Every structure is written in structure tokens, then in C-alpha cells.
Image (cartoon, rainbow, N blue to C red; front, side, top):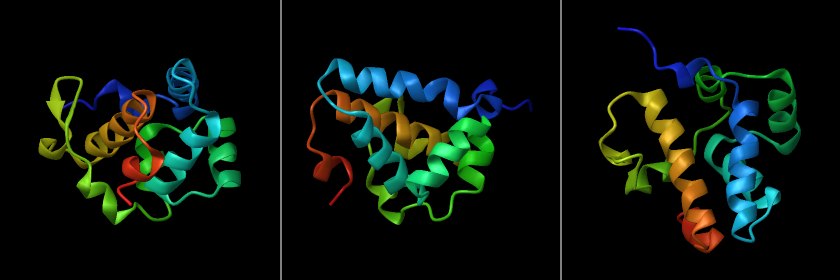
Length: 116
């Protein structure tokens, strides 16, 4: 079965959309970065280098230093699909990130988004 096109898409192509979505609701780039770092374990310098290098989503998640175990507490619907029911691991990681950015844009407190 062919891979979903998002796997080969550069994170840098989607990142500005994450930031813009958050900014439209008065949230910041720093909050978006914080969410990504929390989810993946990348440092800010690593994140910036990967964005500049054009890292694709599949590699971005496959090589993440430490996927946060608390991410499994992320539940809900994104793109009409419950994130906790997604069986393909890479797609689930991508949708976890999408869900967290949506929560940020909806005004949810960062502590709650990070399942603190």
C-alpha cells in the first residue's frame, strides 16, 4: 500500500500553517514550538535545523529523540477521525501534533494541552 503523501511532505511546509493558525487566535510561535518540543523531545536548535533542512514528517517522527509518553493521553477528533483510534503509528503522531495545535488555536491553556 502506498504511503500517505503527508509522510514525504516537509515539516517546514506545514509549520507556517501551524504558527498562523495559532497566531490568528492570539497564540505565539513560541507556544507552537513548545508543543512540538514537548511531543518529540527535540531541542529548539534541533527543531530549527530540521525545519531549515526540510525534514519530512516520516523521518521527523522516526528520529525524534524521545516521543513524550504523555501523548497517549491526547484524545479527540481531528480531520473527522479519533486520534486514539489511528492504527498507523506515523499518522497517529502527525495527528497528535495537529490536535495539539488545534487545541492551542481554540484557546486551551498550554498546561492542559501538554496534559500536565
